[in-house]
Structures are given as C-alpha cells and as structure tokens.
Length: 189
Image (cartoon, rainbow, N blue to C red; front, side, top):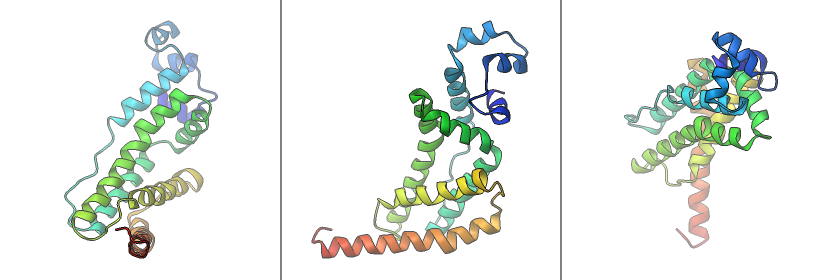
C-alpha cells in the first residue's frame, strides 16, 4: 500500500497522513511502528523484495541463463511502479538509510543474479572473466531502466531475445576476449 501510494504521488509528496488514510488507520498507529516516512518506505521496500522471484539456476547455456535473467528483470520492471522507483532513486541521493535499503532490496539481488550467471558460464567454459558480472548488470539494468522508467514502452519476449542475442552476448564475448588478450600480453593470467 505504501509503495502503491508512492507510485501515485512520488517520494517527495508521500506523507504519513496519506498512508494512514489509504490504510484506514491513524497516524499514531503508523508512527508506533515507523518513526518517519523514510523508515516506512524502507520497510515496504524490504517487504516487497522478499516476494521477488528467484532466478532459476538450471540453465544449460549462457544464452538460456541470460534469457532467464532478462525475463526476470523485465517481469520486475513490469510489475513494479517505474515512477515510484525513479522517485526513490532521487530521494536516496539525500537519504543514506533509504539508499542502503534500495541497494540491498533492489540492486544487490540483481547483482548477485548477474554474478551467478557469469560464474555458471565460467564453470561451463563459455566465459573466463568474472568481471563480466559488472558488465552484465550494467547492460541489463540499463536496458530495464530505459524500457520501464524512461521510455515506459515495456519489454516483450521478442525484444528480450533480440537484446540477449544482439547486444548482451556479443558484448560479453568481446569483453571476455579482450580481457584474455590483455591478460596474456600483460604477462599475468
């Protein structure tokens, strides 16, 4: 309910009064559990993140893993309110506790998914460079932000496949090759 209201009005305009009215309770009841708006929103974010689906780990190829990852992040982008997320990112720049929760609840699980995808690909011999997890995170998160926050035009399955096949895989392979070449020519491997 807090996140729904956040999506409607944004973090800056969100008030405890409005949350209480929407919840059909009193401000006093809310203040008993949460000392301020930041704490209330943080609790709502943590609660929502616990309902996020996990990335399946049974993929047999990098491409399968990437399609699952992009599909999961597109699903989250489609079900979460992009306006709410954008207003949280702005508010997090001024509120360190909110920034921590956004990082822990929204960003770190997706970073972990990217690390897992890259580690599985390394284990299968498809890639070599663990640093590709950062590239993967930035590519996919950037695409999700553009599709759901900036353009708000969604990200259908056909577009996801094209993104994986024509952007993500070529970028990862090129960077992996570059890292290996630099490692060999630099004398450390």
